[in-house]
Amino acid sequence: MQIIPMLINGKWVQGDGQELINVVNPSTGEVLAQIKNASKAQVDEAVRAARHAYESEEWRKVKAYERGQLLIQLAQYIRMHAEEWSLLECRDVGKPLTQARADVEAAARYFEFYGGAADKIMGDTIPIEDGILNAVVLEPVGVTVHIVPWNYPLQITARSVAAAIATGNAVIVKSAEDTPLTTHAMTKWFADKLPRGIFQHITGLGRDVGPFLTTHADINHITFTGSVPTGIEVMKAAAQNIVPVTLELGGKSPNIVFKDAPMEQALEGVMRAIIQNAGQTCSAGARLLIEKDVKEMFVAKLVKKFQTLKIGPGEADVDMGPLLNHQQYLKISTLLKQAKENGYVISGGETITIKGYEKGYYIQPTILDGVDANATLAQEEIFGPVLTILTFTSIDEAIALANGTDYGLVAGVWSKDLDTAHYVASRVKAGQVFVNNYGAAGGIQMPFGGYKKSGIGREKGFVALRNYTQMKNIAIRYSTPNHDSE
Ligand code: TXE
Image (tube, rainbow, N blue to C red; front, side, top):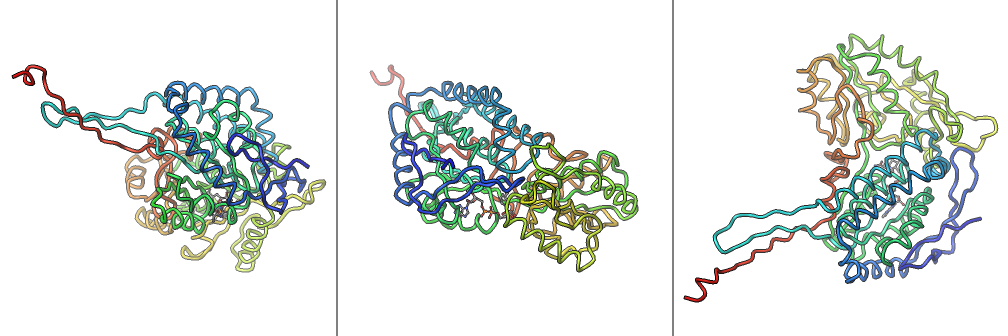
């Protein structure tokens, strides 16, 4: 069985930890590979190597456009090996191949986008007075730590790593214990293309290895995507050394459907928003807010659509794959059991056993109705294909429901009326609002991040480059030669 090695200080090494941690294909239960925990000493070595590489003349001398070219080469390499990387992601996460292929293409686009941006990260000049040139320059922050979750491992690694390398930082990635495979593939590519220590990969259980990184005194930034409780831990750890964080912590995002919505598009949009990646998406459309007048019609059609979905192993390229692991499966099947006992399930609600794939973590896509807006099922992230319906009778009630959770990542508004759409978009507390679509095909270029407990800061787009740069103001006094000679 392959033990996925880490890349630390230019060397391929296994974690010092004794325990072998299985990396499992959620579609089949097959063990794909194993990892070991990095020790504190290994994390220290990685941080020291990153610091040394970052401060080196060798890295300083790499021109901005050369960093960009390197990232664009990686994008090209990813496209050339798209099928191989898609299969890795499909097996590691359990996602349908079509989704895995979209993730691989998105990763290529992140490297291309930030590769293109590398030599266009411009500062500013500020007028002060005659004899002073005041320049604002953007410098790299230094050593950046990237803690990646398991739901979109390749995309989420790519989006922050690409921005951090484009801006000239030294990067340490901690992959999620369940899904290290595509990060390992990326590490193999970077290994001989970058100076030693500029890109490193650490493996291990988050609760054990994560704090070695997040409490380290010699790192300069942490990008974390994951749950709210772990986000709080990361933020507390970072506070000890006044290290800035970018946090993306998921949501309970609403799709708000008005009676004048483009109905067929809304139906498809609402369904896709919750079944994509089996609902294990930070921006999943987990709540349907539906106007009372059209509820019966809309929900009847939605139930029909849900019931035609094909569920199965990722490699069969079905509509929906399994959940990621036993922990997620247990959590969600327990919630569904309670929902059934309370009479909320109007479609789905059962676990599924698929012949030949009995060890896979399959559940039916599920719709819940009758849940109180303040109940856990309508408030907390479930992170599975479970849609909770809430009903409204006025636009202000819709907005209050949309804003009535601790989260604020994404919202969808479905209405043909410009006034309605714009009014809602301006009042919903969410980092991204989509009108008559949901997700805008991924949106590499669009700032992404949350209001409230959905996080701090923004990823994606040009704005994310700011996460990895430090602003320095340089004021230069000069005098004219004639004045000097007087
Ligand atoms: O998350 P964690 P888990 C949510 C989702 C899911 C729940 C639990 O609701 O059901 O979180 O999933 C690393 N210091 N999201 O337990 O713990 C860990 O190794 C540093 C939403 O997987 O947040 C992994 O790499 N790192 C989310 C990453 O943090 C630590 C995506 C996420 O783990 C750590 C994933 C620590 N103390 C889960 N503990 C989204 N926003 O999309 C763990 N990690």
